[in-house]
Image 1 (cartoon, rainbow, N blue to C red):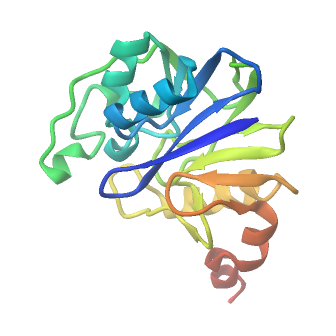
Image 2: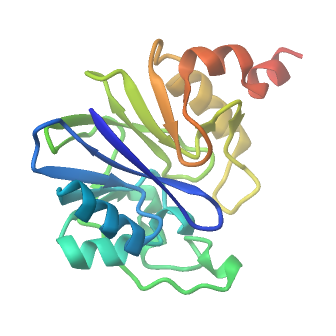
Length: 210
């Protein structure tokens, strides 16, 4: 898998442009800045067919409208976070005094769904906790996952936001993330990590062991 990382905005959100080598198309995961993402698409010479959203918080969907209008790509988001595309309160954009233009999801995702795009196959893994509809996009062929704000390098996503749940995040971490033995992780913020590293060093594990 070819992965082009574009870090966007004040919250340094990782947007990923992904495709199989030789494919003329690509998918964009969490377009955080429309202008920067469209420029990156132009530079790599790929046509975007899918916009894959790990969850509905504003810093991950800020560029959805621009990318959708420019490419016509299919917007895919878990059904429990879909209201974030139409409500600046649900997306938390209102917390930073922003009103995002409403968008309509083209595909509402559920746990276990399969997405075929740009020569790639992703398995949708529902990981509630940071938000009700948080997901990972898992490539079993490439042994990697785009995990949004579920888990970071030696950290996990916040659970003090509307729709968040500490217990749900703990369950997602132990039951959905850690079983991906040998997989690389591409989070929504900060640097890449791996399941092996987080199994050893993530503070959540040390906290629960105490």
